[in-house]
Amino acid sequence: MRIALGSDHGGYRLKEAIKEHLTKKGHFVTDYGTDSIESVDYPDYAEKLCHGILNGEADRGILICGTGIGIAIAANKVKGIRCATVSDVFSAKKCVEHNNCQVMSLGERTIGFGLALELAEAFLTATFEGDRHQRRVDKIMEIENQK
Ligand code: RB5
Image (cartoon, rainbow, N blue to C red; front, side, top):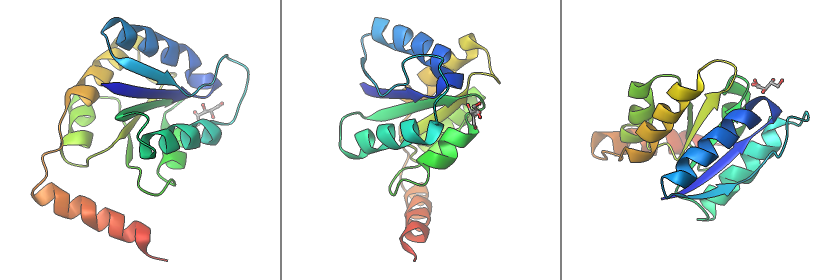
């Protein structure tokens, strides 16, 4: 699977750990930055990664900031993107199975690295179930198209 990773400074260390883990597992990983713990603005990285997903550069994306919240809010402003902030394995699966999220966000300051790797695994192996969930996702996207 082709996986996009992105973070601000608050998520940099966890991004690097996830990158190492996924690369070792044989995934093709594209890193949209940031490249250090120097302070940056999370919307810039959310936007870059989400455009990468929409352009077909990666199948799924994982965004990380301090809490996972700001970077998810920014990601969900990109038209066509569905991003969920996750801190449990059940939600990491369901955000794909039910909500067809292409992007998951994590908080480096809120969860342990071991759990984060399990969340990545759950998110990346889940499949959208379609059917009634497709109807609901379509309704979400209709809201996005309202002016
Ligand atoms: C940066 O200090 C912090 O605000 C950011 O990483 C994130 O937690 C925002 O939601």
